[in-house]
Length: 191
Image (cartoon, rainbow, N blue to C red; front, top):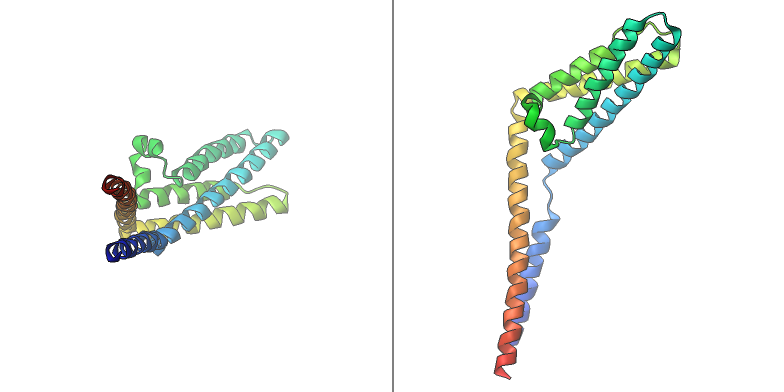
């Protein structure tokens, strides 16, 4: 009887350990994820603004070069948005985007491209261009400064630790499940 109570206590202790380990998330990684979402949304806003500007340039027919320039800005802003997903395929071919300083410089470049040639007659479009370009410029500056301070290295190290912890919790759950199965078999053999 005492052994059974001891087994129940150990089960409760191990399950509370699993819950405790899972409940803690790294605040630095949460901030990085939120900043990535903000940057991706800002890059999408730049895409929208540049598409609208390109349509207006081609529609008027007055400045075809501005329209072509805007098309390039759309393509590069698309890479900025995709880089924020940290998709391994992108990093495989463009290693510079893996480093925060390189990513920040690309964002600053897209912000400057979005802001350049804003000779539109529509005030709303000019306002939208200014908002998108300055927001992406701010994100790019934060990335460059963070890259200089090696925050990207810190983030990758913490991600690796988080993955290791998640794997350890998964292994612990598997061991607990296996232990329960073996105890059940042991109880059946005794009967």
